[in-house]
Amino acid sequence: MNDLARTLNEAIKEENEAVYDMLSNLGKELFYPKGILSQSAEAGQKAHRFNASIGIATEHGQPMHFSHIQNIFSDEFSPKDLYPYAPPQGKEELRKEWKKKLLAENPSLKDVNFGLPIATNALTHGLSIAADLFADEGDVVILPDKYWGNYNITFNVRRGTTVSTYPLFNEENTFNTAGLKATIEANKDKGKVILVLNFPNNPTGYTPGQSEAEEIVEVIKEAAENGLNLVVLVDDAYFGLFFEDSIKESIFGLLANVHPRVLPVKIDGATKENYVWGFRVGFITFAHESDAVLNALEQKTKGIIRGTISSASHPSQSIILNSLRSEEFAKEKQEKFEQMKKRAVKLKEILNKEEYNKYWSYYPFNSGYFMCMKLNGIDAEELRLHLLDKYGVGTISINSTDLRIAFSSVEESDLEELFSLIAQGAQDLLEK
Image 1 (cartoon, one colour):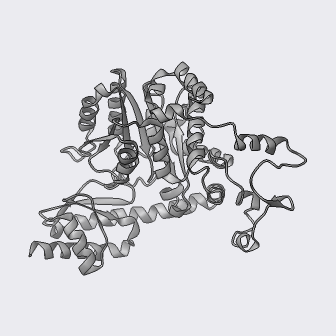
Image 2 (cartoon, rainbow, N blue to C red):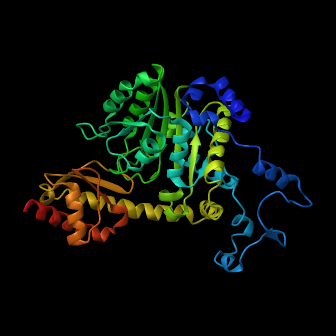
Image 3 (cartoon, helix red, strand yellow):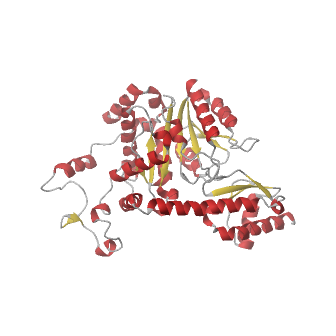
């Protein structure tokens, strides 16, 4: 094992041995090397005469670049904010700005010790980092029965974990806290579990209410008090799109510092929140009482990034930074939120029409991009293909009964026609 990795591990163990035990074998081996990047950073601060340390080209005191590319960008973006490599942990000003945003939007974080967000190549990369840090072959990842399918590749295929699920909803169509508790207890002999909480949920668009969120935290705390280590990955991809009857902040804040055996990890980003899917700017943030633990986890995360993508896109980070600082940001974000909320409200009005009861019921939704229907006596994949082939309508089949609809990608004025076509497709199949 590298001496730097050993030093980081000792720092974690000294502060909280449970967090050390949560690390995967790879996580324990990880470190951030004192190599070209760290030497270049030192040169950037002290090399006032010549800096021949970093592998980029310069001319006239700035990064060398093509004029036809620079002309695409406005005068707001200097070449230094576009062409050089961003640091593996991300652009420092952006990290600080994102932390300010987290504090403003999550009141529960006010008195919590948490690290500076680390920039990732959007959320899937953040989840992948967490998997590398904490997941070994045979470890258990706990998910609701309705979850984003890419988790399988991230945790099961890449890291060899076992996925254990619980029904997302109980008989009252609220969050199934009892099911979560039973699944955690069924795996208590493992010593460690990785729990993924994704609100607003993909595919259902559900976010728990305040009392439900508090119950979830209590279940996790109780499991920790009974000796189980829990890495809680909070997938906040659709954060902020809370339309009705739900918590209005991330459960990350409620989990932070709740117990020494609980390590909350927030994975979020501008991708969906700020409608910049192709920019690929996300963040991974750790919460812990100890600054030494936070520093060690950051160094290990930087090591993963350096050893995989090296760093995320600098132009994308600079654009997002400018956006967050823009006077138009809050106004435009509220405008988009109102559009999305109107679609969700309209959608519920349509779904509650009696004429559709024979075709489907729907799972609770109050947030996010999606809703999910439970079909009555119709195979979801068969209906998906039929809608595509006969009516030119694209949907997603989740399993044999559930069909996901992304109302985020359909104008409010088109929702009536969309569901009329889905109902017609369902009727076609029932008449076969």
